[in-house]
Image 1 (spheres, one colour):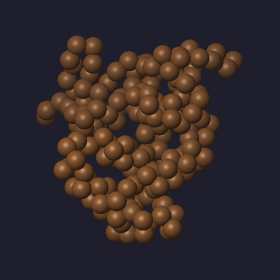
Image 2 (image 1 turned 60 degrees about the vertical axis):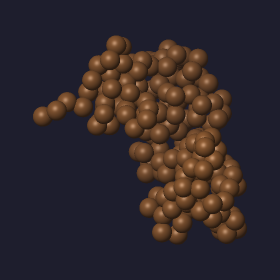
Image 3 (image 1 turned 45 degrees about the horizontal axis):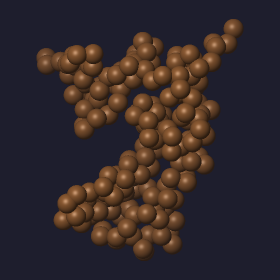
Image 4 (image 1 turned 30 degrees about the vertical axis):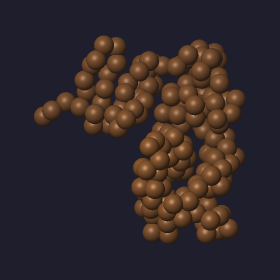
Length: 175
C-alpha cells in the first residue's frame, strides 16, 4: 500500500488529504490545504491565534486560521459558504481575463444554480442578478455577512478555538 505522507524538509505533505487534524492539534502542528494537497506545518504563533478573534477577515487571511476555520465548518456541514467565498476571491484574481467566463460558470454551477451540488443560500432578490457570467460580489458579501454573524461567533465559542489558544500559549489552562 502506497503511503500518502511524504516528508520534505520540515514539512509533511499528505497527498491523500487524510484527516489527522486532532493528532496535529495535540502535537502542535496544523494541516493547511495548498493547491489540492494537505500540508502539515508547525502550529501558529500566539499572536496569530489571538488575531483570529479580532475579525473574520483576520481569520481568513491567516493560512492556519483558514485551515482551522475550514475544519470547524466541515464539522458543522457548512463548508460550502467558505468554499464559495474563496472561489469568488480566486475568480476576482483570474488572469488572463479569457478564463473568467469559464470560472464564473463553474462557480455558478457549483454554488448558485438551483441544481448546484453545494448550493449556498443567498437572498432571493440577489439570485436573478447572478448569472453564469455575472458579478458575484453581492452574493459574496451576503455569505461573508452570514459567516461573520453566524459561523464565526460559533467558531470562537467552540472547543476548537480555545484549544488553539491554550496550545499556542495565549491563555493558561484552567485548573
